[in-house]
Amino acid sequence: MKKLFLAVAILATTAVTTTVSAQRLLRFGIKGGANLGKLDGTGFQDGFKLGYHLGGFAQLNLIKGFGVQGEVIFSSTKTETTSDFNHFYDNVTDADNRKKINLNYLSIPLLANIDLGTPRLKLQVGPQFGAMVSDRKVFGAANTAFKGGEISGVAGLWLQLPIVNVSARYIIGFNDVKGIGSIANTSNWKNQGIQLGVGVTL
Image (cartoon, rainbow, N blue to C red; front, side):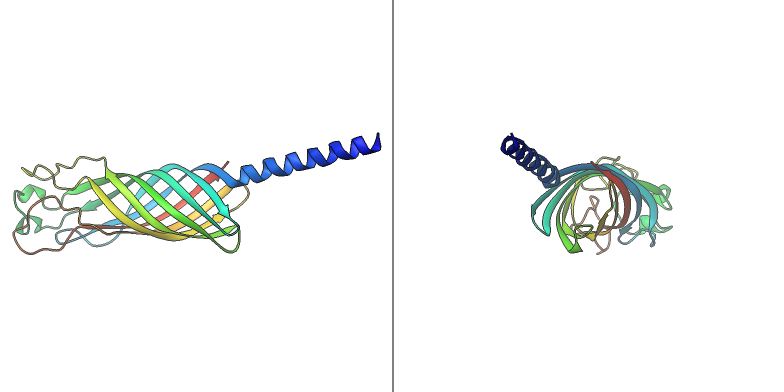
């Protein structure tokens, strides 16, 4: 009887350990927070403007100290043109000067999670792919002021507390999102952002 009890106890312990390990191998969650974003390019006001983001994520822990994380995030920021915007671009008018524009993207970051001495604190780096979901026809007669997609780079920190997670990251656009012609040899339009988030890990 004692041997049977011992065997059952060992099996139960193994089952619990296996279940916990499986839960830690793949985890899901939701997150949201603030965006500080700007569109870097000729004809746009400098400085970061406040926005927000909201979405979900999945973490896959591959080996000790390293994993990957995928997210689907709705991200919204704002920008504003300068008072002489129409001097630089085709098919725009005086009405497009000092114009406020919403920049809404559905973003998919694919990040590497690297432990920084503890599983609680991770360095996150990787690419982000975004599709613009706000109105792209925002200037006068221009058909598409913005391109439909962008590729960015992401770097930041992730703090995993019990259940709650906190994150901070910097996002920089790699490709030109300008979709209209320019009168002069103006700069590309590239997004930049600081993202501060809090969420729940299941």
